[in-house]
Image (cartoon, rainbow, N blue to C red; front, side, top):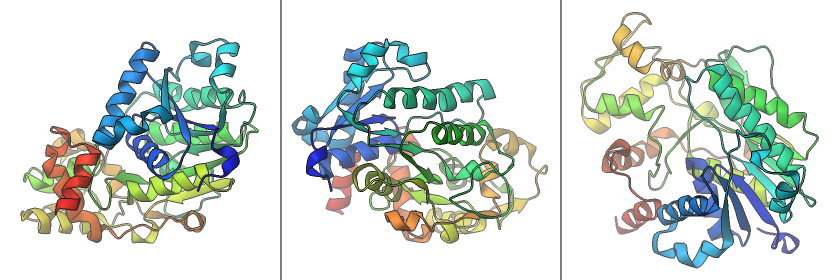
Length: 363
């Protein structure tokens, strides 16, 4: 997959300690011969290397040592102008970089707009400024979200950007704004827009139990007798392997431009579909769907996530399919996802990625 001329070039990967970034890092180390530079939020470079060691232990377990020499971490706060470094320091940092993959972002839905902008817009601008200093830059791959489409019906197409849509939260708003910053940068770039990313289709592994996991956990415990929402609303979820494989292709195969969805598209389940799957898996009483406003306590507790269970639109995958985006229907992977969630106690007892792979191999 890696051209010979690129083997000594580094990939700068932001967000390497996050879910998707970890999955891409694993693929870069096990499927290519590329070396990786990982800016990590830490007090100093030694602390950054320590955080990276923890990530590699989670990803690779006993194999981490053999691959450790191919990735280095540097302390960097993307919210600080110029990373808090001089231009000479930044030039030295990216002297060997030809590819930048920007996965880092705040995925919190409830941040005040200035805080979300600082993370997702200003942070993106800082990364682009750093990329522009790389003398051999070939490409920037920016990770956005399919939900920049906002709260609107119909099909959201990959070529569409800001068409006057209403964002559901500051996360969507600032990811849309970040796309505009990337487009205006003048750098060779492409954009990957995942939908709601869940665990691996084969092992169920995820370190991040949010968005759909919260209501499914509540359902499993009988804590959601009613659900304020639309049973026909779609929840577009995609397993992380689909997204990370697409991201690897954008980073390491021939350079592409434009925007690509990594989503379920027409395969996206409805809220009722997810409830039916949960009822069958956990053997619980089916909850009732009620109108918004009829369950205020639940809405207060889960209000940030509920809009994603009443989406009436869908995502076009025309360009995504050209980079191998082939989502699995949720009924095919649901039991695997839930078994891992229960095994990990919904994140309270984390299971390492390599351990999840061994459990699958032993099954």
